[in-house]
Image 1 (tube, helix red, strand yellow):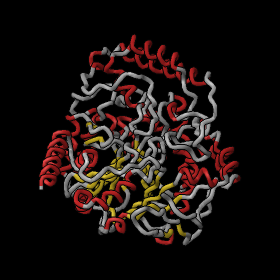
Image 2 (image 1 turned 90 degrees about the horizontal axis):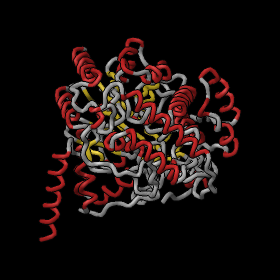
Image 3 (image 1 turned 90 degrees about the vertical axis):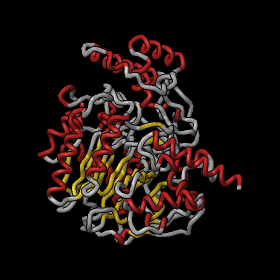
Image 4 (image 1 turned 60 degrees about the vertical axis):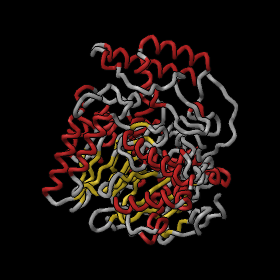
Length: 565
């Protein structure tokens, strides 16, 4: 699938990389200087070469192209990186442990059953579905990792609401104790080495130290001094307990800062950055947001500290014309705990959003919205990502401020994705760094226009199989958006045009789908007019399940009519 051998790309020495990266997970912030010394001594911080060309990825559908770093100047304020779903796991051992345990030592089936029973004695089935369901893997590549074997329910009665305030600490303590027992049970197991992995990781595993450092080094080679690096959440690996999670987030962020000391890092919070997963109280009810502020404080403007400590959102003035409004959308997820489905505005974040947009309008400024979980349809499961109330309220706000909001940046879905709900709102979903869902790790470099919109972007990808076989990280220029789809920019109008092309041209759809899965080795392109294709395309344009179902029904009628001709 990837032909030829790339040249003039950054290569990372495998043995020293592995040795130097092994201690990142528990690295204290006070010793960050030592980390830099280790990185430089192991040649982990690449010295970018001006004008160096990043070799292109050959696809089955398009000729090889090259994108040069000479196209980007260090002092250009209109380029920024958008990366997401790093999922750094300091315990990841992709060459030793199977993906069914997130590439960490798995627990035995007897121990799993015992822990499931103890959880069932404390939690309701609904709580288990919402809490532990966030740890499940959604891909079809045989990963199957979950703490509970219970099926996820389709309805949400929100039994958490019936819990009294006095029971919450007990339940949280129980979950923390269970997670500790899971970790102890894993550490007791020994397993033979599994084939298919290597120092740069394995499909089905979260991001190892080597892969994280390789990603940051590649970004530095592409553009050493971007004005901004936007990270739309999920800094930590899946299923980590509290201390491991905190250390993973801190190591991911601090190392990124070390690679880009002259850039402004813009962090958003993901569901795996919560403790436990998907659990976020308002700042007045817990300490986790304050803990995260301690990690991210260098990136949070001083006048936004109270907002971040309250709900995890904030606002950044990116230029004289453009603001970035960062939201914590975990509150609106169908898996969020404690349940806030019936609360009109959890923690006051939507009021903050309206206030920020009003201020932008009054001062003739444009706004980006960056967050982890997007609204609308999960195209993996064809279910809602947000609860109905907040999904509807959010789209109402978007429709009120189409003159202010120019672009949306999200993560969470791990695949190269977009949403086109209208010609007014452009939703870009970046592919992940973590290869846990069978995708190749990816980096996105956005080019902004003079008006603040996105003029273009370049997508870069690492072929994990090749990297492990050749013992070197060859980050490739996968595609350039404007050239790949013959569009003039990445505006809402252009995304609407792209969606139309995907619906009427199977060749364009196939090209897009390979990029959608970042050239995953498990990619299987849906056939023309198949149900899988109809579900996916309708998911790209539907704000809610009712609109999605109407779209699917229309597609079916159209396909049926064509078949009778």
